[in-house]
Length: 471
Ligand SMILES: Cc1cc2nc3c(=O)[nH]c(=O)nc-3n(C[C@H](O)[C@H](O)[C@H](O)COP(=O)(O)OP(=O)(O)OC[C@H]3O[C@@H](n4cnc5c(N)ncnc54)[C@H](O)[C@@H]3O)c2cc1C
Ligand code: SF4
Image (cartoon, rainbow, N blue to C red; front, top):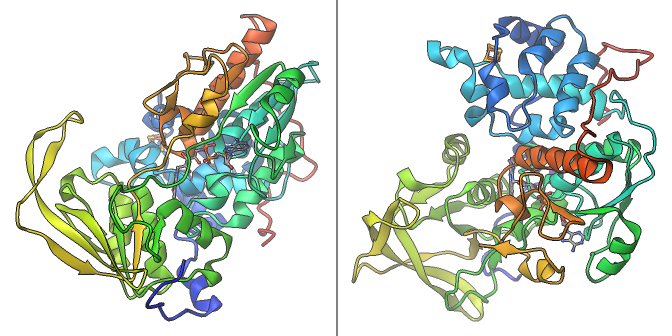
């Protein structure tokens, strides 16, 4: 993607500093002090607010007595992706947003950071703390090794299934490895979590795109059930002329490049990002932290209707990202084959549209051009409709796979979880759906009484210490 004016490249040290962890690991003292603030509420609102219903007061109580293994077991039993959720979850609108301290206008308990404190010494070092049921003789294939596929694989393994998880990429983790902002979760952390699941006995087959490299008929022949966790596709097109110019790219593709190697990303000096969802904010913030001189977000609605969380919005503003509200792109302008400006039109808000939000309407004659040498499109991801069409009985509505309450599709052998079902939510939603799908598969194959029974985990030789991280 040649770019006309390339931003001055930062040194690897500067990039590492700019991409450093925004919520670093807690010390023993800080974690113990924070845990001791918890009121251990009855019917805790934080637990109810978590899509995986982690028993927050229980794990925090265990931390308060320095029982780290016990705390991790509580978390991982409810959510096997507790380590990545501790980093990636929008806690301010989930558990921490529900913490009773908010009612007193006091800072909520830092549940996410405590969760990381509890899970890192277990997950990042590969200590197995959850029991695995004996082999039950059945086999499940999981398509996609992102959060949905990883969680489904692990939950099925816990129930005694032989699990093979396929992914088209060269590394497991899906968007945990190739999407989430590096200052929230590093590649090492995402891969160590996948490794934890491999150590539970899940077999990974990478660089294997199901439907092309591995035929679906092979999976159907070898499996008692199949879980589809293929996520969403590439960035959607804007549908504007000039979109094919050099210097124009999609947000998810740009972010993948950053995750693969931030020191090799070729950046423009003046960057425009189209869209104001969480992915747009990530792309804008990452571009700014990589050394772009200006990063401007244009969005056709007003600040009030933006799709991103306030936390992400404030992060971008702090990094110097500029926002143009009520501005819609109409044409990408180029010089000698490369983008040179984005032609826009000003908008005003009209009566509500189908989404219930005021519909943006163009103001005639208000066109203007914003110069840029890189344009990042971020108005959603395409759906993998073609893939699902090849599977008889699997219906897709509005781009989402249709499932019942047990995440079973119209084809009884196939279940589906994660972004391909919910249209694109969070890691924690994929984990919650995967757990429900695993339980539904178990009931489908072993009868309605086959409800997973929680058991105590294996004892560890050296529990309750917080070892240094391996990286
Ligand atoms: C840029 C970005 C930033 C985000 N940041 C956050 C965040 O900070 N916090 C948060 O909670 N959520 C975040 N999300 C959302 C979160 O990443 C997703 O909700 C989550 O990854 C969904 O998991 P999934 O398993 O359904 O899909 P994915 O993570 O997309 O994984 C799908 C996997 O399936 C594989 N696949 C696809 N087709 C095939 C095939 N035919 N054969 C084999 N493999 C296949 C893909 O290679 C991929 O690895 C972000 C999303 C994006 C795009
Ligand atoms: S709501 Fe807050 S104080 Fe109450 S149990 Fe949850 S974290 Fe602790």
